Length: 106
Image (cartoon, rainbow, N blue to C red; front, side, top):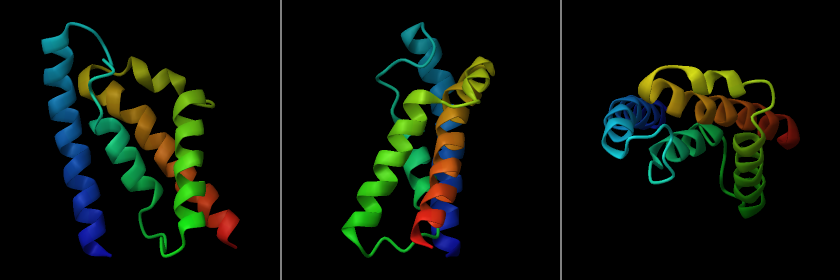
């Protein structure tokens, strides 16, 4: 439980720092070569979820990807500066996917 939270927090913090640097390096915002935001979002999707069944993993992944692509109601966070803007939309998609996955499991 605590280890999962620690890994998620470390990846998210590293994501903000490395995304900021990558944005400067590539000369554009949210370059497709930056994928740590996707990793952090997926980690949040499954944080404290029992992933012992393949169906739960598949549903969670699909939920995360759909929410990450559509960004329902939270597209504005991409305007945050540097790595924060790159990471925020994926973290919100992951949080929402986590909540939806919990509802589906009920």
